[in-house]
Length: 174
Image (cartoon, rainbow, N blue to C red; front, side, top):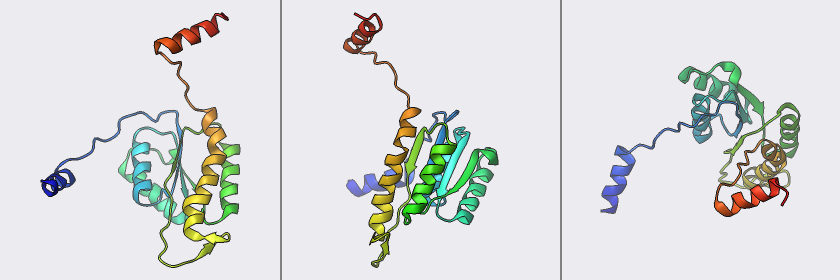
C-alpha cells in the first residue's frame, strides 16, 4: 500500500498555494535565480511583497529570474531588486551585510536558500567550498542580519491567562 499511497500523493494531490499577505514586508532570498529560491520569490512576489531582494552570485542570472517572475505575476519590476552575493567569498558576504544594514530600514524575512554540492574537492576562503558556502557564509549572513530582523519582528502580547495577568500587573505597576 505504501507505493500506491506515494504514487497518489505525488501525482494527484497538490499543496495549497500560500495566501498570507506580504504587503509592507521586506524579504531577502539567497540563491533566488533558480530552483526553490526562484519559486519562493515568485510566490512571495505574488503575495504583494513591495521589496523583494534576490541575492544572487550571478547578476545576469538574477536579472533573468526577475524578468521571469515579473512576466508570470502581476508585480511591478520596481518591487524586485537584484543584489550580488557570493557565499564562497567572505568579503562579498560582508559587503552584502553592510549594504542591507545601511539601505534597509526593515527586514521581515530572510530565506537562506543558496547552496552548492561539489563532487570534487575545492577550497573557498581556506575551507572546503561546500562548508564555506552552505555553512560558514550562511551562518555569517544570518547572524549578522539578525539585529535587523529582530528590530522589525512582531511581538504580540500573550493572551493566555497567566501571561495576560503578568502583563496586566506590569502595566498597572503592581
